Image (cartoon, one colour):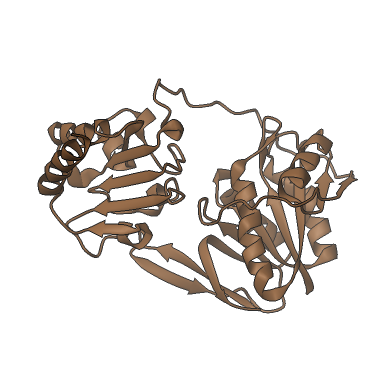
Length: 324
């Protein structure tokens, strides 16, 4: 296998998605161990501006692939355009973001190249060859998986598991335009979810409520804590939104907003992967939960094993005293 790591960048509406820059940070941590070369892959039409953007922001050499049917994501067209390149170059790893696009495309690519596939990866150890870690059973169990030897390993990386690294120089760009056979499907476009006035990405402090709050009336306590901070905002886990306790604009997670505040307070949140994928990039994560075995403590920097209805009022009073 070639000592090479392919990084497949995701793009939408003419912009490279920020999760793709995180892939480069993850790959560079791997490179620090095995010294492999990195190659960015961008698919689109037109692709040159996207490839130039990715090479500029990451500093790695980038191949832009342009052909019919890939102005937006299309699994069939992506596979026809990228599959032959991967089969020819035989990289050790192909890294893809674990997004709606990534988890749809990665297994297809692995089958097409007769490779292996590891999904929802959160880290790695040993290596080379590497073994990867991923959470299963709602985050209650951490599993170790190893790619099949002597195959290209297609790996999807959970968003937020690595930080983008600044580029020291612009990477080189190469544009290829393969001819593919007519495809039978087309992307009809994207319909963006309507957003309310709340933009959690601008908050410096997010206090998020989970089902552990108990009932809708108890949300007021969490709201008061959020209001105790300058630039604070109220967030929520998916079960809280699904139950109708708060509107969608408050949801943090893969199907909500991805946030990176200075402080994230998780109140009564179990820590399912769907949620932690949207907040584990916070500078400081504090979890409050009565269940000391809750998965949220695996991603938190500080953990408070206490009834939130006891702890939060005490914290609010302490914050008020601090300001006097």
